[in-house]
Image (cartoon, each protein chain N blue to C red):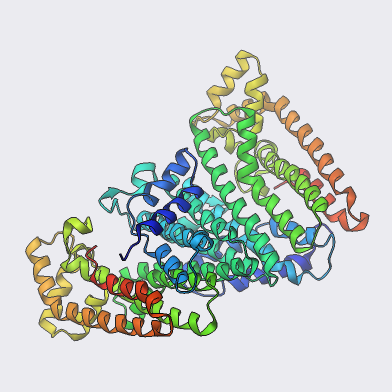
Length: 317
Length: 317
């Protein structure tokens, strides 16, 4: 099975040890952490580790660290973006107020590095610290770029840099941290970084595709939300580069218009169809490349990472 | 001289290396960082290090880390407390907006741990990571307690726990990190922790005293702000425990009343006088205890830390 229940349970047990208090701050910190996240990042860390090693206890604190960082970013992003719901549930700041939500994010941030400090081996702890702190810097830089994009249409290169930082950096770090904990050599580590870069990219693109052609119930948000919000996704940027003037004009009229009707969203999706196809093709290509980089590892052991690459672009939420 | 300019300059140069970019995010992150802070925490780390060692290059990344953490907490606290000014200047969220201010704090948070990762020795980096991440957890817990105090009058014990976490934890961590970097043994490290606990306490109490009897211009805020805001300081908590019923009633009427006149603030300060004296006595006692713990160190080398303990309770802003 792709997501091994036993591993997921161990990740959750590890996560619980970091937030094992019952007061307002800790309850705010736990609100999202145990609200049904997919655990893709810690899972990536664990299954990367399992390319070379079996006893996963050693990698669990590092795996918890990336999930704690991911959750802090979600809590703070929801405040910044004024999002009231996530996964169909009210966001932390809606339930606990903004000040407590900021603080809950800050606590998870601290707990992530506390988790890194639990790694027993000094050299590995140091290495994981380097990787994770660098990723945290990039996540902030990516989020700042994304916020700036509200004011203009970025080029494809700017867009790709933004998602590599905002979404990719932590996914890459998850894989790299798994590699460090498993004592991977330089060649293996580099191959895994290349793998991770590609699945980070496809992860974000699939999010953008799902917003346009996904299932509302599974997503927990209406189809086309990104169009209503005028979000600059790879699909929109590709469309603006390739569409004829009439269609481009029509699309720009619809994008970011909060009062548009459902038919207009459907019309925009129709206009975006060739760009959705482009995005799907790009994802396929990147997924194949990602899997190619895994070839230096044992066939049986690499299977989960191959399946994960496929899962990312076939997932429906 | 108490604050050696050469050391302060080296701390600032080290800090600059972490925020050496010129865009909105980095400018927001630098806004407060180079706005005239006293650098007490990194200075403590450096001069603690100098109890045993001379070449301070080794300790600078660790020293930068505590200052970066301190600055992230100030930025986020100002958002949570809706404070528009700090040190007589507009706060980060006033200048850059709340979303960018949250993110600027998050970036400094990441940069702090990036700074720790720059420590060359694996064992020391790991040890500093343990100390700093634990302190960050406590700072959040202390801030949450402080926020809860808005809804009730805490006991003296609750109050002391709050300031030990909110203010003390990072000051203690600064000293302990200096000790780790200087290869202090267990006995030395414990003595320094006891020293730091006491100066952390006096640091917060002096802040509270200055708010009542300090110089408005030096403080950059009007005298008695804490009274207007109804802040529960050690002075207020002591007063409520020791005053007769009439004075207690009068004080409770004034505290937290946003519309009170200057005469009423003066009246409250008059009522609080015995408790201000109590606070001053407590600080003196704790400062003496703090200095006593330094006695195991070389007389010449420990002098700066002794002077710093004295400075904290004699400073006027």
